[in-house]
Length: 193
Image (tube, rainbow, N blue to C red; front, side, top):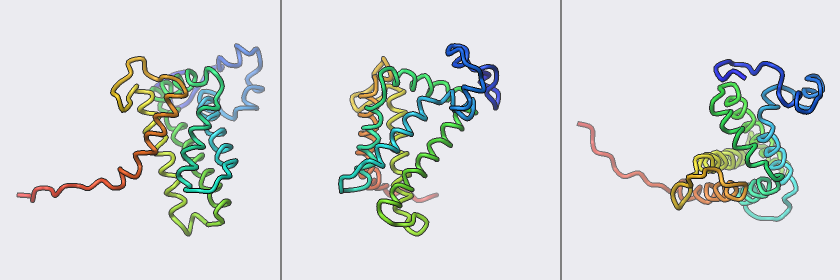
């Protein structure tokens, strides 16, 4: 895979290791980018499923938070290491970085559609639903970045990552920071001279 190119080319190693043909591999994953970003796709599918299954009443943002944490914790053993490699691959490969951004936008829309169905509200007419999707994915991105970088409330973890439990904790911390973020006041700025 050439990090400077805008496409992913060459036979995918997954097909060679599994001893299956490329056409069989891509029948299940539509593009080479989907194959490279499989760990991320697994999380988005689990997140949507957990959120659709969330039946308890209460604030929608809390349901989005608990559903994402549950999705992270439901991932199989070794997923966190595959996901960490995926994040690093996307960081160094522009086409995969864009693919990751588009995937997060798609899951955000899926979450909004679930909210629309559950609340019987059209998100085109009520911006709150779209904002909830934005807040959920913003919290995800902040938590994920902190996890990948090894940042946490107690400083840096030199080992980075730290497993699914740590990732879920970083995401929970980001969700918890939303209200305080919205309440931040700016001090008066000096008058221009």
